[in-house]
Image 1 (cartoon, rainbow, N blue to C red):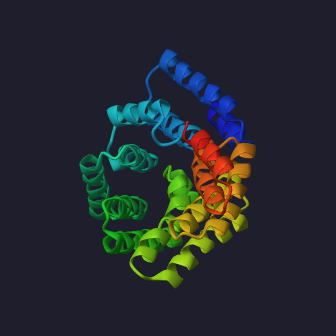
Image 2: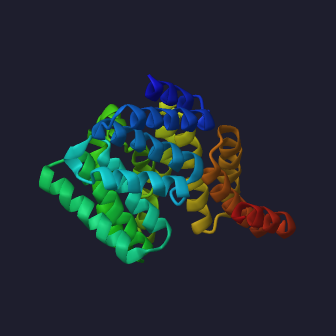
Image 3: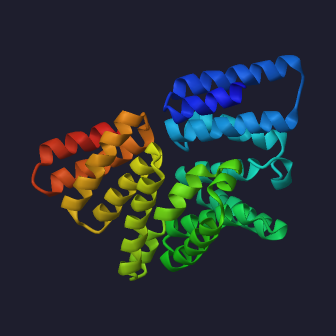
Length: 278
């Protein structure tokens, strides 16, 4: 019942309430006896909640990931474990620990292939591809991220959510745009970036709509199109503020600040950029 209440709070963007509800559920579980699978599922929901509300590199995200790893760490232990392994990769990748991120990504993809687990293969393909992108290998990144997108297209949304991969579904649809563009495949890159926004709008969920707009602002900033970068980033900032998504709010704020400075308002732009980085 508490898990259902927490999920209702998340749907209403009441993240503090959802966090408190999950913490009470974990306390009750500890008091009334260990149940490893149930505890894994509670901590997995904490990972999803903390990642959306605080970011991949927050202490709360890391603590939840480490607790699940201590409890299991094997794909077959609970449906949500694959999402936790993916979040663990994302934590270290976002902290630029590239050797560790590459190792975790390779392990996740290998485990998915070994178990013939499409969700794990999608998560592993994304992790390998995004690690390659961060390492300056756009062609390899595009190959793996295209595979991720193909796998996600065949997975029902309910299965993606059940496996704790809701954020992968959002990232997997838009992250392909950068390596495609760097690999000289501009038309495909545009389709990926704008298609992610269209899908988010079709689904009607607030976080994906904000996240994909933030990404599209970043995409235009990387291409040097300041006006489009500002339009999409400013929209993402508004949505991030309204929804309580600090990760989106601050990243989009950085791109918006650069764009304002680039189109002739450096004072406002630099202030916005610094505020986003604080």
